[in-house]
Image 1 (cartoon, rainbow, N blue to C red):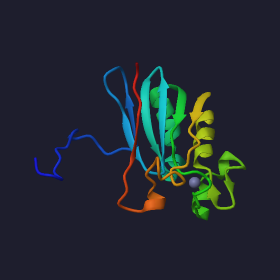
Image 2: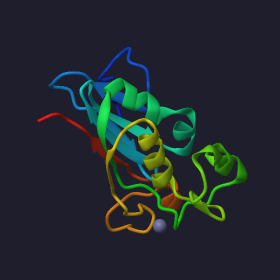
Image 3: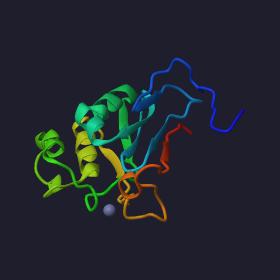
Length: 159
Ligand SMILES: [Zn+2]
């Protein structure tokens, strides 16, 4: 196969920001480079959801929790409030979650996801506090590097 040409590994599947695997043998994966990769696990299966501000504002956390019947979640590395300056539109999208999500225009996306997980009934939540933009030795960061940059992969599976 020539370099740069890849067969579509899943013809017919729509592109999506979240995947739920029901049963064993499938490993959902998301790619991110500042957005949060969030893993969900519950009686309905395991899920990976890709959480940028648009997806979070559109309810991807609640949808993922419902689909996986999630009781536990892990929020992976993403851009921290130290580096995530946003505009009024983005801040306004999360006003309903209450105060303390932002310092000025610096939004804490992890806290957005954590509050939404709690609202959806998930009590067991682990959070990676590392900022992708602050750690070039560990992570790709779209904000820091621009395009092209790499992506982190987040995967979830059942033992
Ligand atoms: Zn940072």
